[in-house]
Length: 363
Ligand SMILES: Cc1ncc(COP(=O)(O)O)c(C=O)c1O
Image (cartoon, rainbow, N blue to C red; front, side, top):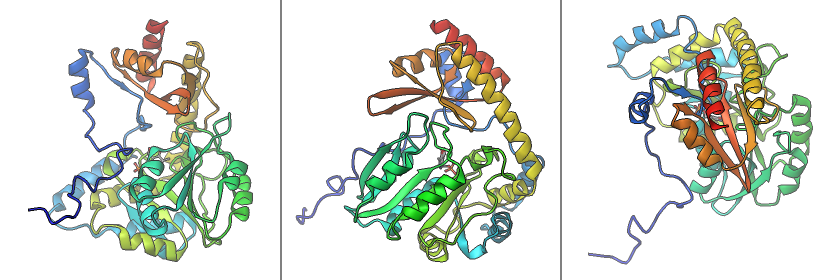
């Protein structure tokens, strides 16, 4: 029987959004390609595992998997202390990724505008489309940093959210806090600015980076993740810090119990080790210099980056990615407009040696 309404298949989500498909494991990829070792440099992952003591604490927490998670407050307290904000301003989620959708759902009526940089983190576009927004893309500057004046110019009466990624993924470009503050002063108050600081800990100079977060503006919030320098991508934990009404809106949309206690405990213990953040940042800087050398000697000119990955303009990127993959080296193709790029994570010393050998094979 058909009652005249659209069928579920007809009420489709935009086909511009790629459907989820589980990644193949590196072990499965190695078997498929018949290679001994995979250098996995395609997903901006940390080459380091969890912080000292985290794996042991997480293993102990596994004995209580019959209980629903109840260690979230301890993590929120440590986060509040780190950024000098109230716990009311924080919502912890299963990675930073879902926060982007929660913000679109809460603050963007269908048909209104979301401004994003391009190239930048793919979820901004996907989630804005999911919630029926019109996406306005502002190209990054030639040095890979967000173009703040062009972003300001793109604002209109229907603009609801601006996603800014600083340092930016995939370019690695970074704008100093004073530039961002001037920009925020110029943004009209009807526009929410979500500052995605997934890679904040890789920035030098500040004490273990971005420590104090300014909540004096009612329309500015910050996204953070434990997936990058903290090496917890597989545990899925991130958070938003924002003025209380924004945090409450996200808190209403967030699903109960979607952050496990294993993740809560691992994240809490990680934040209690600021020296390890510094150590990893310094090691990443050294590794990035090595990767830069490897890329340059293979005719790739990476953009300036403060992060654990480099992006270089190239041509025929799909073929290059495939030919590197055949040699067990996974890297990411990025396409923005007519420009193609290769994005490569710094990895560990073995990964870089494998990458270097594979790039030489392509010459
Ligand atoms: C800029 C940016 N924001 C957010 C995320 C999502 O992080 P999470 O693993 O916490 O979902 C990523 C992951 O790559 C990212 O690059």
